[in-house]
Length: 301
Ligand SMILES: [Zn+2]
Image (tube, rainbow, N blue to C red; front, side, top):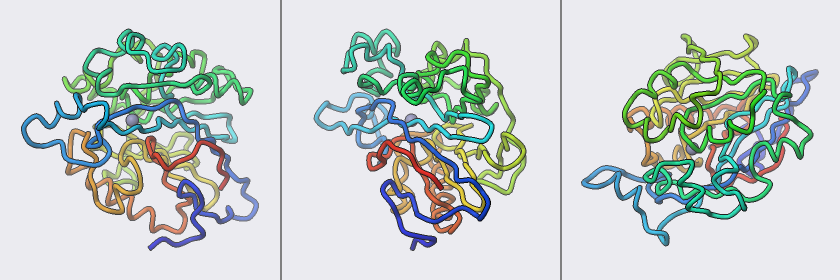
């Protein structure tokens, strides 16, 4: 059951902010796509060769998923959450295996099969909105997977680039060395912030970015160790940017654990937590980074 107003396109529920509180505007930016095995968003990876099947899925079996970034018009200035693909993987805006291989190692390139159509790179979309990288108050990275950080190279000059310390620390794991090529982010000066004890999230760890609860990074481990969801608050209401804790509401509504992650137990706990948030009347929307039903556009809440 969902309460608290009519559901709009993309799962956004109508309803107004508390009186006297200016609505928050959030831009949903589609920064390319990836064609992955169907087990990545929904399905098991277990059994012999499970991981390999994800990597080597045949062309015809792949499912195309969007790669979203989010731009928040915050009172302190524009704040970007994640960065999508970089123009280098798709110089002409079409799938270009050679260009992809110049950015991603062979296995990762085969896993993602990324495309970035013309005009969809993050800096191209910011420019269309009249925003330069140096105008960005902050770039928040939910985690270090390539599809979330590749666009960083277009955002030199942003005032802050913020990453949970836990995500940075665990990038030393062998599996992340493959998933999160350091060449995409290691030379970008980042502010690595520690999660602190909190009432929020399945892990009860969060980072209150400005100390006023307007933007809170909430640890949702499972997909990666340090992954953050971002809670954007407007008065009594909030939107939750769930990163890759779920690929669409189907994951938490039908209890289908995504097939790609390091801990299925933590993925399951995160889905349970997201399901509870959906029942919260204050929750205007939960947006996933790769939800095929989510449409680019603007929402105010
Ligand atoms: Zn992702």
